[in-house]
Image (cartoon, rainbow, N blue to C red; front, side, top):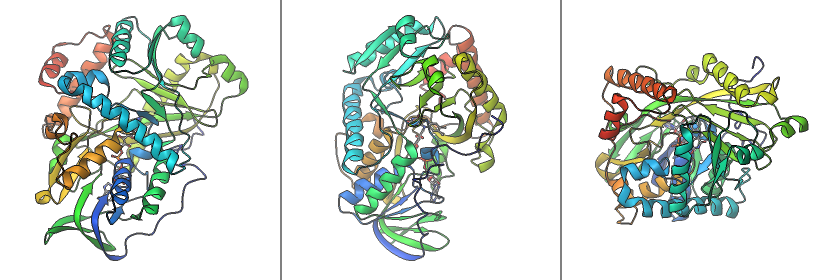
Length: 456
Ligand SMILES: Cc1cc2nc3c(=O)[nH]c(=O)nc-3n(C[C@H](O)[C@H](O)[C@H](O)COP(=O)(O)OP(=O)(O)OC[C@H]3O[C@@H](n4cnc5c(N)ncnc54)[C@H](O)[C@@H]3O)c2cc1C
């Protein structure tokens, strides 16, 4: 760990494109997109493909935020998992799961059509039980996946350990087609190029400092210039928002990741994992892990850190105590890899909302829209989120905009200090539930009844 570079593995890549010039002077557009993560990029690409004049303004670099720092699990689910969707929109889940499948297919097709080299792998994901009480959850999960037509196989301990060998494993569900794995930064870089090829203009190092109505449209100002546009789409995730409403619904929660050096042939042999599936465990405080193209292991999760006041700042990208804990858990899971070194360590802000899945809204009298709140599962859902936001801006009445999930907002978080206190209480209750065979105490049961929650 001592030598691990304090930066995201995915961004530390020779394919990283040169920085695009910042906005300099004034520009005209049909749509100005604020934020160059997956949500902003999918918006820019889809709008440019419709023939709109698009300008995208990114404050730092493309993929600077969560989009360049995540685990690269590209799940079909639009609802942060089927169980969460069924709890909130039971009547819509048939439609939402069909749209989820279409969305994942759409991402795969875009990657292929634009020859985006992003290490796309249709290997599926395995959810593993490491505690006896989780075995029952696995069975429920397999049944839910199959109900919506996904190819899911329940694995007992022996079958699971034949796939990936950890002494902590008691069983698993291998969902073969409900998620892919991707290198998220290279996906972003490829989407930015594809958007430009479709006619969009992309500026980096161009933080938008003000967004205001101007005539029938909107004006986005940066230090170097301004874009006058018919519409604006805000894709700023967990970062300080340009419209106040977002602050009520979204809190930045930091999640941390380690990456190992490439495994030797003998180390690979010791753990198996020839199927290279994505893996996560079933605890409230869960780990997610996967391999990279060059045979490393990406290992993240467990801690989800909210700081009083919800600061997003570069110094929060590093948290030694979380890295130590993650390393300890790594070697408990794979004791065969004792001595393996970590080469990268980093963190990033997740845009957590109380229902764990995207929320949409309009601002500036309908001239602007926003989509935020993906809560740790936005790699795939961001394309759908962007599509819906474009529908809303254009005033289109579609199957998507009629969804209750789209029309309704989540419950807002209270202001500070109640916000911080409530999140601490909930996190402690989730940790306690993990220690007590998954049993949820009175606080969590009350939140469940209210439809409020905390996750990453
Ligand atoms: C550690 C970690 C692991 C994760 N793992 C997974 C996973 O495996 N699978 C999954 O599905 N999801 C995962 N997620 C979540 C996923 O990364 C996000 O849901 C997704 O990337 C959100 O994309 P986004 O474009 O909305 O946000 P971001 O990628 O955060 O992009 C927002 C962008 O807006 C820019 N910006 C902000 N304000 C301004 C402004 N005023 N002007 C101009 N630009 C601005 C920022 O610089 C940033 O680039 C993870 C997240 C983290 C942090």
